[in-house]
Structure formats: structure tokens, C-alpha cells
Length: 197
Image (cartoon, rainbow, N blue to C red; front, side, top):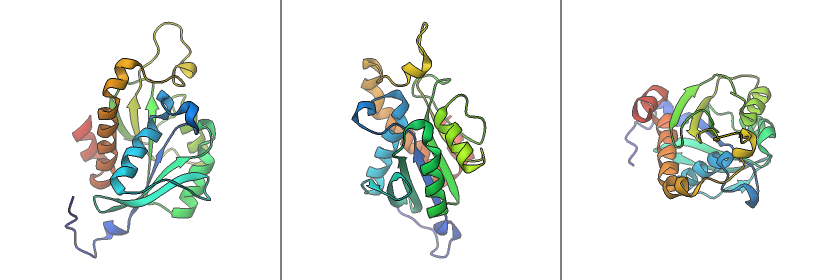
């Protein structure tokens, strides 16, 4: 997509840190809890970069989305310790915008919602980030994974892979979540909400 803004446009100097939440290692790759990692893999493909270890404690890709400077970050810690690497990345890169992509139990599968701030709703990754940053005021891209049926513990449920039915449409939904994240960064929260909610 062509970037037709004037060279002195201050937007060009803004930097968005986009964090995808998940657990490291092959054991967790296809888990519902790892949707943040899956969406960031799609975004990395769009910026033409490969994740590399960074001293912040996250895997990092730097590049541009529709002309906007972005840093993509996947914490190398486990979910409930995500805050440390995120805070380190914020300190290192000094972003003007922080976006966190994560799974959301209280939304139907593949429903995408975006917001600024709010509580953690029992999500340990968000809780850790809020504590480490000392603020709730960061953007969230919430990808619905639905609640488990019956008596299954939600903590066990999010550590299971997507169902066979869900996997059939997962690639398409990851692409859509990446579109929403890109719109949030390039067009702003309200425009992105109008387009994807």
C-alpha cells in the first residue's frame, strides 16, 4: 500500500509497539492462549521480517505497516510473566502507542473487539503487563476464543488447541485480526472499531 503522506508528517515519527501474547515453545503453538503469537506471525510476514531474540526478553521484528513504524514483540516468558519483557521493550523502544493482542474468553470464537484501557478480566498476561507498566492505558485487540462448555476449567481450556471446526477457518480469522490490528495502528481506534466491530 502506497504511503502518500508528506515527508515531514509527524505521524512518520510515531512508533507502535504491538505485543502478541502466548506461551513459548512448540508444546503451546496451537493453543487458544497463543492467538496473539499467531496474529503477530501474520504481521511479521506483512512487514517482511523474521523474529529475532532481543535483550528485552522478547522476540522482535521491526518494520513498517502501511508506512507506520512498528515493533512486533512476542515475550519469551510464559504468559503470566509477560509484563517484564513488555516493560523492557517499552523502555528500550519508547513507543508512542502500545497494542496488546490476546485471547478473550468472553467473546464468541473469532469475534474481534478493540479498546483502550480496562481491566484484565482474569487474563494473567494482561494482569502482568498492567502491573509492570503501572497503567491500564494501552490498546487491546481481543480475539474471541469462547468459554468452555460444561465444567471444563477455563485455565485448561485456553491451553488446548483450537477445535477441528475452528481450525478450518483459523487462518482466515488470523488474517482478519491482523487487518484489525493494522487498522488500529494506521487509522486509529475509532476507525478500526467502526470497521471491525
